[in-house]
Length: 463
Ligand code: FAD
Image 1 (cartoon, rainbow, N blue to C red):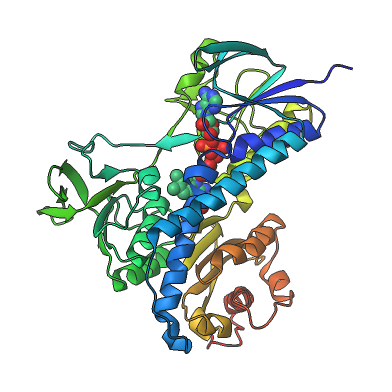
Image 2 (image 1 turned 90 degrees about the vertical axis):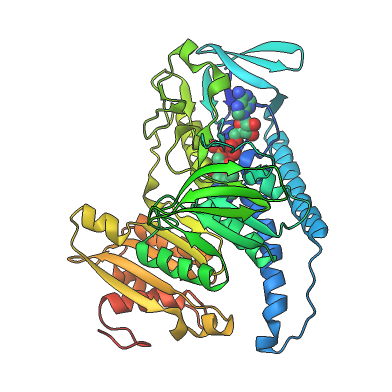
């Protein structure tokens, strides 16, 4: 029997996972990538930022080691930090290449575009070829967005990719945009000795995060010396000298000039679907963002789309999960994508992580809920690690079903997996409480927060 021909466009965490899964299910798979395998995530996103964050954390630990009796004279070799980052990136990109080969996925370098729903043109240098497909999975991702601010193209302005490639740590950096990427970059460069300022148009940084958690994090960042200007708009940037002059309008209406050696523009990502010629095949999109259903199907039969190019939650693990779903459906199975268990993690110091509803969202949905909070000052492992924070659980008032968990504290990004599983399984507070958590771990605080929601916390007074 002829095998189904599946073409995947884009080799990021969405595309390469979709390609592997489709191959596992017996398809003849071709993946087209115009740049590097691994996409944004491996090359200029998740992995390089976390590698530099690791350097920053080790640097901080070395400097603060005297608290627990380790006296070290820490100096930074940023060139070596960049080399370490690149080694990890290269290793992982090589790993993706190996996995695709092991699964017999054919990889073609070039820019793909549609000729019709079952024919894809691939251009590479001067060469053009046409590939036939029974199914196409689009996974072309996103690219940094530059807002139309006068002067934003001066030499000192960089995007996240530029920041990850810097040769030296600048003396000062102003970050336009207090979202996840901006705040992680702020953490890296501030910890490494740069004077960091953040300008955010909204009334708080990380506006998508539970207000109490983002407030705690903002307090910590300010304490470490960052200047945070919220409800502040950038009016223009003037380059030219050693530093750029950024004119901002503060909440009070007053105008202010902030000077910085580098200006990191981190205001969001632009969908990268322009090169696909979607209109030729009638794939529905909203200014490039491809419209899909829960099966990751577009409006055109046989064409699926996944990951950043569909908008929504622009995260690598979402892209990969959608990749598996699209591959299964392309191979005539019926699997729906469910966002309910999607964790959002911010790799600051301390980390923050959340899954499910925030209190604000629960209120908006008019859900009757209860809240359990456990401060990490009462958690032994957090104290040992020199970090504070909180676990906050939101549960349905009647049945105790866990609706949301929000954590700020050490290892939050790992601990959140337990909470995602609980939400996925529609677990209740009692089920979480009935699960024995190892001691001493930060995860004990999750159980204690569940106990607190039932006003039976053991290590804090119940109110
Ligand atoms: P991408 O990874 O963007 O891959 C798309 C690929 O398609 C690219 O390789 C591109 O070259 C290729 N392509 C585009 N058009 C064509 C074409 N016409 N023909 C052929 N190939 C094409 N997410 C997390 O979950 N955790 C994090 O910690 C995290 N940190 C991040 C930090 C930064 C600085 C950034 C920028 C992003 C971060 N993200 C993080 C987001 C994450 O990187 C993306 O959500 C993820 O990479 C999206 O995967 P994707 O497969 O949809 O697209």
